[in-house]
Image 1 (cartoon, rainbow, N blue to C red):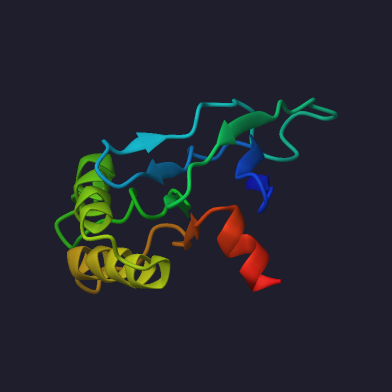
Image 2 (image 1 turned 30 degrees about the horizontal axis):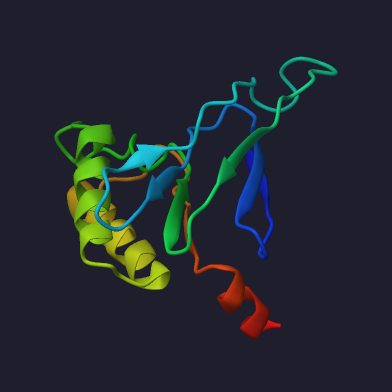
Length: 142
């Protein structure tokens, strides 16, 4: 599980991870990166575990991409994994194209589907892409 609270006025993301991969941060003109790691076991594995929270300051236009591990663990009929290298190449291409979050979500899901080519999924596949456009954009949305 990954959970976060995004302050829409200031772009501060506070988050925690329970055995989940860190989301990717995409910034126009910059290398793909991941949120700083805050380690924690999957939920309910250790009773009363005190999960740490991380903080990350988004800049206007930053895009976050969260996904379950079913994306990188997707396999094709030959048993090959989709993998992190392919994922990062796709995300880099999408970030460079300045695509809308919904377009990025659909494009990534379509690439995983093409790769798997009908092979049964090993695990769930969930993808969420969101962009923080800055405080002015947040004020207009209210």
